Image (cartoon, rainbow, N blue to C red; front, side, top):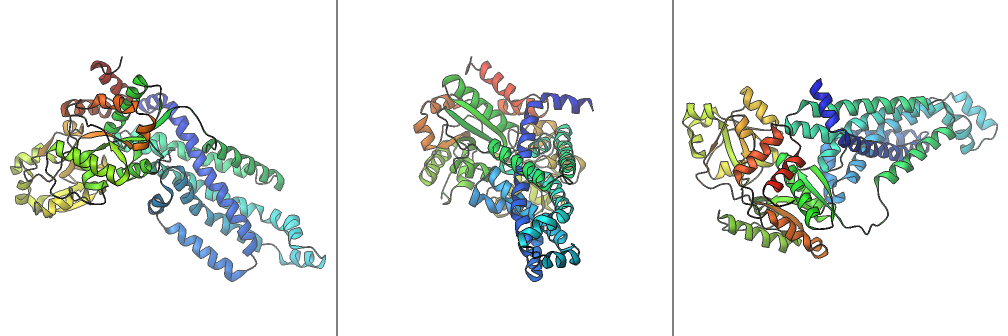
Length: 504
């Protein structure tokens, strides 16, 4: 409990930002779903066949996994708040639509006959008694939708939309239950609070209800999206999930702000490689740390043939190819290589005489591997283990940090790691030699658009102060400070830069 309170106090500023982002994406989605559902439900309520088909379609849309929808919208809408909101709107429509139709159909037919006898128009019927009588049902649907959307909005963090889900993802990545609880409890309390507030206005006048929702919607839209232009010099730097990208983007920020007059905004734990790559091309972010091996193996439409494992050659090929393909600039990399490696417990390696990946062939029937989704589907990943090494063992896909728990419990006995992961130390792992050179060199450097460098040429000199710096041993120790000692990534980044005289 003390650790939970301490963590919350240390991250209170981040929590406030995440809470606001969560409110924005969930409530904007709710209001848009209302604007779509309620008028349409009024229009089709008396058309039985049309309403039944509509409800079936809306119900089917709810059965599609939210992660699938988020993934489908990325090529069309990019990443960030907009695809998250569109996905949530789709999920929010059904409860409101269903309850509105039910409420309107449940009105006593005698009232309808009386209204017709008095010569009331359709609008007069709606205004006088239909909507007021159906309002409890409508509000009930809105409340159901709000609770569901606030819970589902945590997934927005996976595509850079922010929100309380960022605490949950960070907690899983850092194996920190306090962070997970902060995100989960905050989301639950927020859902309960919004549900209670909506119930409170349920019996108010229709004009009051409409005014409250409309004003709230306008305020949220205004706080979420900026429609003006700014002449200030600023850049947005994002990082993948994990301690290492978090450290690197903080180094980038410190270097740029030290040697230029540019203000830097950070988006840590932004998501997986493809999310950041698309965000960079779509101008949603300006810079992110990438690796030469990732570019050559995953980001190029046309595979480079005959590529050796020489780090310098791989960097040059990656730099030229990514520029030709997308006009992206890959700056000179750091010294260390954060390449893939296959790891087992040292005890398991000793018991089975494992020194190199080829040795796994003799214990293939004993292997239970836990791989990330990305590694499992890569040519320089599990596919390469099958084709190059001829290995075909049982493998399950898991979130990166959850694999270590499974490894300690004995549920799995082999995983892929990055060669600078702090968990190599903390979980007493042995890295097996890549004796057939499956994994290409992975040197890290800043990836950014050519137009960004043309606008801010001074950024290149600032960022390339890291070129040739940071050994694999140093990076492992930096990761250890964040993952194990619990230090803030910004503090660890600044300490390194100061100790190596890269900033004052």
